[in-house]
Amino acid sequence: MNRIVISLTLASALALGACKKDPPESTPPLPEETVTNPGGNTGMGTDTTMGGPGSQSHFAQAMMGADTILFDTDRYNIDSEDAVALRRQAEYLLQYTNARATVEGHADERGTRDYNLALGERRATAAKNYLVSLGVPEGRLTTVSYGEERPVATGTNESAWARNRRAVTVMITR
Image (cartoon, rainbow, N blue to C red):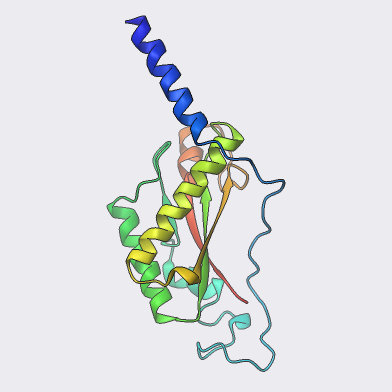
């Protein structure tokens, strides 16, 4: 019995090691919400610098929390609740055709930095791929993983960890 446990532990460690990525030298900057568009037309009817359609503030208000999907521990699969939120996001992005977004992947503090960055990337990619499957052009979406670097909840407990295991869609402006 102990040999089985040891074998499973070693196999798990090898599998996780295969997912290893070199960590970035620094985390990317936060997306900027406002950029002026001197004399240009955004194609959205309103200047995105003023919180109009396609801006982060407009998107957040329209989503009412559906800009974030949550994951179980060590998971990156899209469940039925996530699918509902992602459908709302896709509807928004399909309505505002010049809007571009970044899907941010996050993890809780447990696990190594490398593991959490890789898991955050898988979460962001899963959300992006789902949006693309709903008709959002892939060229309008980017992904970034912050791993455990940008928690929304502090604390070393299941409640905080659950809130930090997430993918967040953020509008970006050019």
